[in-house]
Length: 215
Image (tube, rainbow, N blue to C red):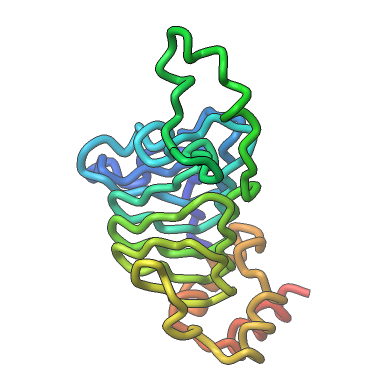
């Protein structure tokens, strides 16, 4: 009998570990999109991900996270609402203090942003890593613990440091091209379940054979 796939709709995939939550069934903001099985791990309050881990999210830019992403404790996404003016003598946002200063909101409204923050599929974020506004992180990437990601990360790249720099890529260019074509994260759950060991520990050749077998 074929094993039953995991359920992507439960908030706590491991009931004995309430610190782990699946984000797709948890997120309510229309400005946040998360794919199936992407999870966040935090011993404090993982269910508050939208408010504790996505900061300065005043819109309209979106945070888009793909499928099968692993987000370690304390990951933070800084959104475009954190921007201040930098072209004048002061960066201080006086209008938000209210009073007679509130009439100058035009000076901080519509600050230029970098657009949506987009995370691909199968991305691993280490402990307390941080992603700055408008960054795009490719499929299969790894963001090291404590990294501050200020620029785009290539598919299957490993980045670390502050600011984060590319350390290396997980596979050769040719194999990355093959992996992107295979896009195992878009396979039916039954097929993923059948070939789980190959996805986790096999070779690209073996993954291609698994994909060909379903044709």
